[in-house]
Length: 124
Image 1 (cartoon, rainbow, N blue to C red):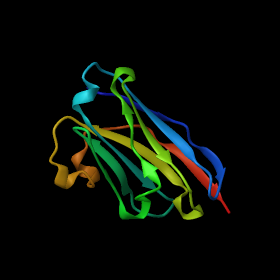
Image 2: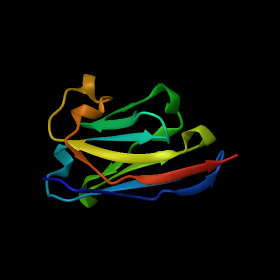
Image 3: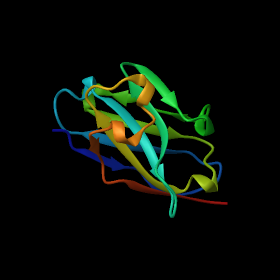
């Protein structure tokens, strides 16, 4: 069982940066793939980025602006978001799964564990 707790959300201006954290319980977090999703009001949850076995994947809309580092010694993953846009305001969720094929990392259904989410608001 893995428990995930996100933090770092807040109110920022368009163009600013923000780093979200996802702290995980358990001693084998390094063996888990981790993903970040976001859900804006009235919209479906969408894939943002993921990291699996040292390889990273991201949605086209965030390529070049978002990165997904992790610190396995701290059992913590991050979502570094740069040049934020107002339309990226959403609740951001981290998720984890023990074994998953890279080809389905963008599917929310592929993940077994989810955090409670953290709100990111971006104003113009």
